[in-house]
Length: 76
Image 1 (cartoon, rainbow, N blue to C red):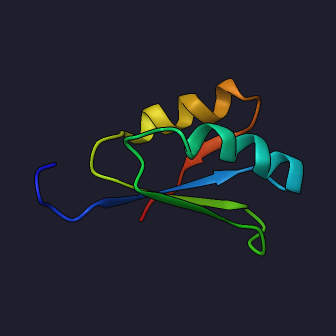
Image 2: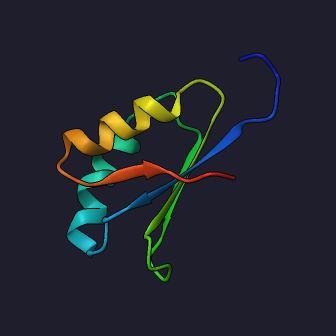
């Protein structure tokens, strides 16, 4: 690692149910480039926050879309 603070990437998703969360968890938990992540289920946009200094927003979007979910980066 480069010692810099991790970047927080923020996305709008359609990850709403517990089973959706479990599906995403199985992939993101095993992605070594992601330090932490969470989904705000209270937010209408089901906001996904990913903390990493190695993975790009485009790569996160690809991961989520491959699982069949919508994912779009939100501006800061």
